[in-house]
Image (cartoon, rainbow, N blue to C red; front, side, top):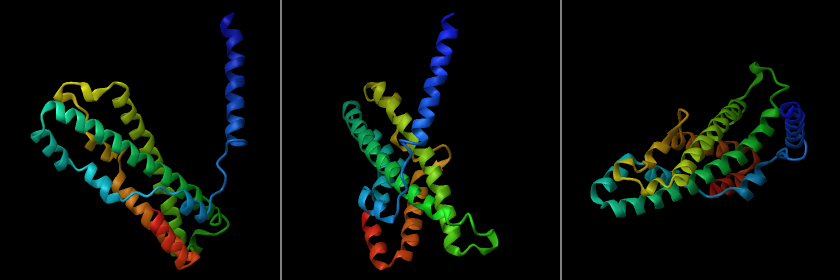
Length: 200
């Protein structure tokens, strides 16, 4: 009886949520101006240093347990901030290059230019990085929820495991995605190229 009553409510809610996501809350189209305006600055070298296995190994060898716990908690918070920037910038670039990709739908593949192939690569990389961001966010969230920085020394989370999630190396892919975005911005002129380079 209760299941028969709840089933239409669950399906109705799911239907309304799907309609809302595809109409009201659908991401609006972005262009290069949106990327420049909204991007959060992140140097991939900073992220690489944070996720460096040698750096973490050195900390584990040289610090006391209490100092290591405090340091790892700080490093996890910094990793969360950096990876939120990766996810945010990736979403901006993805919305922009999806607009560029729509222009390719009318073209035959034989007519694609080098720029068209760069757009397609950027779309693929953005999707991979969005999946990476989801997996990394879940991992960091679980570390913080379980307060793992207070656990015994050998069970403390290793920030370096965030370097690769779902088979995606975040540093390599994010660096390549930003290179592609900057290369694609050249179409709009040197001013846009320089402004995007500065923003990312």
